[in-house]
Length: 107
Image (cartoon, rainbow, N blue to C red; front, side, top):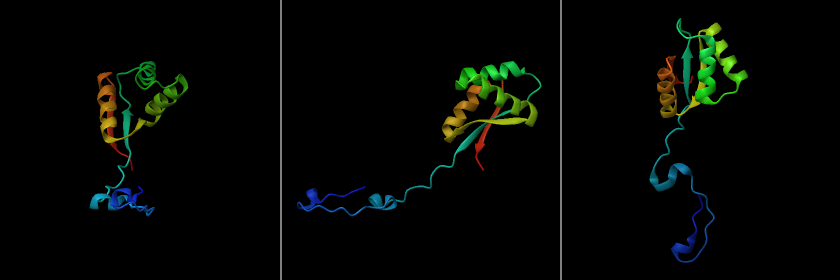
Protein backbone atom coordinates (compact mmCIF):
# COMPACT_ATOMS: atom_id res chain seq x y z
CA UNK A 1 0.00 0.00 0.00
CA UNK A 2 1.38 3.38 -0.94
CA UNK A 3 0.55 6.59 0.85
CA UNK A 4 0.54 9.76 -1.20
CA UNK A 5 1.03 13.08 0.40
CA UNK A 6 -1.50 14.91 -1.79
CA UNK A 7 -4.01 14.74 1.00
CA UNK A 8 -1.33 15.85 3.47
CA UNK A 9 -0.12 19.13 2.01
CA UNK A 10 0.86 18.19 -1.52
CA UNK A 11 4.09 16.22 -0.98
CA UNK A 12 4.39 12.67 -2.29
CA UNK A 13 5.65 9.85 -0.13
CA UNK A 14 6.46 6.46 -1.58
CA UNK A 15 7.12 4.79 1.74
CA UNK A 16 5.43 1.40 1.84
CA UNK A 17 3.13 0.59 4.71
CA UNK A 18 3.35 -2.95 6.05
CA UNK A 19 0.07 -4.85 5.88
CA UNK A 20 0.03 -5.53 9.62
CA UNK A 21 0.37 -1.82 10.30
CA UNK A 22 -2.66 -0.72 8.30
CA UNK A 23 -5.01 1.12 10.63
CA UNK A 24 -3.00 -0.22 13.57
CA UNK A 25 -4.53 -3.67 13.15
CA UNK A 26 -2.79 -6.98 12.82
CA UNK A 27 -3.60 -9.02 9.77
CA UNK A 28 -4.79 -12.48 10.80
CA UNK A 29 -2.68 -15.48 9.87
CA UNK A 30 -3.64 -16.81 6.46
CA UNK A 31 -6.45 -19.36 6.66
CA UNK A 32 -4.93 -22.78 6.24
CA UNK A 33 -6.66 -24.73 3.52
CA UNK A 34 -9.38 -27.14 4.47
CA UNK A 35 -10.11 -30.39 2.69
CA UNK A 36 -13.28 -32.26 1.76
CA UNK A 37 -13.02 -36.02 2.05
CA UNK A 38 -15.17 -38.79 0.63
CA UNK A 39 -15.03 -42.09 2.50
CA UNK A 40 -15.60 -45.61 1.26
CA UNK A 41 -19.02 -47.00 2.05
CA UNK A 42 -20.77 -50.32 1.45
CA UNK A 43 -23.73 -48.71 -0.33
CA UNK A 44 -22.72 -46.63 -3.35
CA UNK A 45 -21.53 -48.17 -6.60
CA UNK A 46 -18.18 -47.05 -7.99
CA UNK A 47 -19.89 -45.79 -11.16
CA UNK A 48 -22.23 -43.65 -9.07
CA UNK A 49 -19.35 -42.11 -7.07
CA UNK A 50 -17.59 -41.29 -10.35
CA UNK A 51 -20.81 -39.77 -11.67
CA UNK A 52 -21.16 -37.56 -8.57
CA UNK A 53 -17.59 -36.28 -8.90
CA UNK A 54 -18.18 -35.46 -12.55
CA UNK A 55 -21.60 -33.91 -11.99
CA UNK A 56 -20.98 -31.91 -8.83
CA UNK A 57 -17.34 -30.84 -9.28
CA UNK A 58 -17.23 -30.92 -13.06
CA UNK A 59 -14.19 -33.21 -12.98
CA UNK A 60 -13.28 -35.04 -16.16
CA UNK A 61 -13.88 -38.77 -16.35
CA UNK A 62 -10.21 -39.61 -15.72
CA UNK A 63 -9.89 -37.47 -12.57
CA UNK A 64 -13.27 -38.59 -11.24
CA UNK A 65 -12.33 -42.23 -11.79
CA UNK A 66 -8.94 -41.77 -10.10
CA UNK A 67 -10.60 -40.18 -7.05
CA UNK A 68 -13.24 -42.92 -6.93
CA UNK A 69 -10.49 -45.57 -7.01
CA UNK A 70 -8.72 -43.82 -4.12
CA UNK A 71 -11.97 -43.98 -2.17
CA UNK A 72 -12.40 -47.66 -3.05
CA UNK A 73 -8.81 -48.85 -2.47
CA UNK A 74 -7.49 -46.43 0.16
CA UNK A 75 -10.74 -45.89 2.03
CA UNK A 76 -10.94 -42.17 1.33
CA UNK A 77 -9.99 -39.42 -1.10
CA UNK A 78 -9.46 -35.69 -0.83
CA UNK A 79 -11.88 -34.35 -3.43
CA UNK A 80 -11.49 -30.60 -2.86
CA UNK A 81 -9.42 -28.02 -0.97
CA UNK A 82 -10.18 -24.45 0.00
CA UNK A 83 -11.80 -22.34 2.67
CA UNK A 84 -13.67 -23.86 5.57
CA UNK A 85 -16.96 -22.43 4.32
CA UNK A 86 -16.51 -23.88 0.84
CA UNK A 87 -15.51 -27.32 2.17
CA UNK A 88 -18.56 -27.29 4.43
CA UNK A 89 -20.72 -26.53 1.39
CA UNK A 90 -19.11 -29.32 -0.64
CA UNK A 91 -19.52 -31.79 2.24
CA UNK A 92 -23.21 -31.01 2.59
CA UNK A 93 -23.72 -31.36 -1.16
CA UNK A 94 -21.89 -34.69 -1.29
CA UNK A 95 -23.92 -35.95 1.64
CA UNK A 96 -27.01 -34.88 -0.29
CA UNK A 97 -25.89 -37.29 -3.03
CA UNK A 98 -25.70 -40.02 -0.39
CA UNK A 99 -21.91 -40.15 -0.11
CA UNK A 100 -20.07 -40.38 3.18
CA UNK A 101 -18.25 -37.03 3.23
CA UNK A 102 -16.51 -34.94 5.87
CA UNK A 103 -14.27 -31.88 5.97
CA UNK A 104 -11.28 -31.00 8.11
CA UNK A 105 -8.34 -28.64 8.32
CA UNK A 106 -5.50 -29.76 6.07
CA UNK A 107 -2.46 -30.92 7.98
